[in-house]
Image 1 (tube, rainbow over the protein chains, first blue to last red):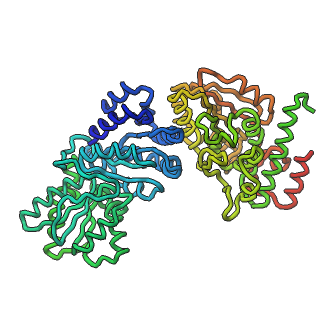
Image 2: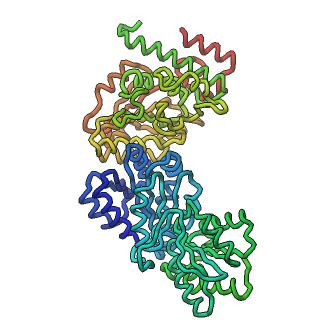
Image 3: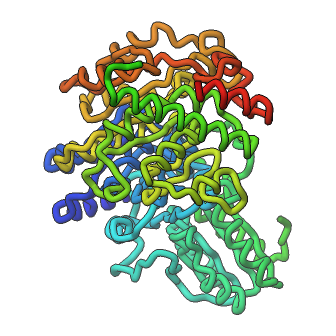
Length: 311
Length: 272
């Protein structure tokens, strides 16, 4: 996903000399081509994320479209107040490209997990928040991010993410992608969890349950129409995100459901407040916290079929 | 009396600016008078002579940029922008008023000559660094001036910018430090000692000059002596509350605003 995004950005940069790329000393070999071809538009600011945001904002004020890259906690949490004031408040063309959503950096540990970023970013003024689900969406997003005025947070996985779209999707900011149409039960997911719910649906299908799957790649602006439409036609709705269960996708959807007085059952699946002391790789941790296809399928099945609707 | 008539003019302007600042702060019971009075001379030097920017060129991509990183001293910036016709009388009268134009910290408004919103310390130098870098990328000749406070240098983000600008030799970036020696809760020396201050900057690759920040001759002299190979910092040794005897060098006037009697005495002192 990461490679696809930057390959596309490198292509765009050939025709658009206002694109500037900053990294806070991460992305080994990822930018070699861009750097070689655009030495005056690539800067490794050093391990200095706060400065990266300020410098990016100054560049953007002078007409540049600036992409800032590093791992999510350093990009978002370390520099948050600078993102809030410099990039968001001034409504600048600063595109924050964070890698490592959720447990992507499994064995690297808590310091590298992106658990709270969606909650933090969706409350910032002018900020668009997107998490593509596969390399094809990431490619689409590279171009869209350049063409969209204002600050944007792009939450990426790492690399090696499988392709889930057989053909190029109609990827538009703020418009959910309907992956499959089912009945009665609907699941909203974003980013890495789209593939997980596609796989979970396969498990459920074998047991006779065919939920509707909706890919909410854009958290802000949120596709309210899609939520309203789903709410009208489904008795049970679930959200799945590789993020703290409070504050992110599930909360955003829940807010809409409350406003429209949805009278079905709604359940959020995400990462709990406190993590276990156990360590593990990405898949291990996703399974541990209920985000593997098997665990998601189990939760959906219980919710839909056995009446186990405890929150 | 100064021999140089232009310096005399600037000194008169400084008195005018101080009177406006006093009025703005007194009438609205606003804070930060001490911080505002310590940077009067540098702002006059910039806007009356050094900066290549005017209301007509306020959005020109080739204009010089000025950032008041110590945003809390904005009454002085507002008074100077008013004198240079960026701000109207109505704008000025709207200082710290409900529905008015000007807050206690500057809000970005290019048409009013305010480049970025500041007030949270430690932002201006990084954004100025980005602007200076953009000039280099685009081959433009404008300069970027960032006025900071000495207390503000407690913020670690500044030192990231100082590293970057030093490493990349951004010669079009000029940091100005209003070193009035007092921050919100005490003397800078007691809160977090910055000394040796000048050598800190020079060790990061900056050209450092230290001058009396209230002396126009020294200010203009420093600008004549800028490095063309390194980023520049001018450390302006100033007095907090400069121009009003009972405010000078006193922590109290970081936040306090003058009452009617104090206001009257202050005006009399400045008029002398």
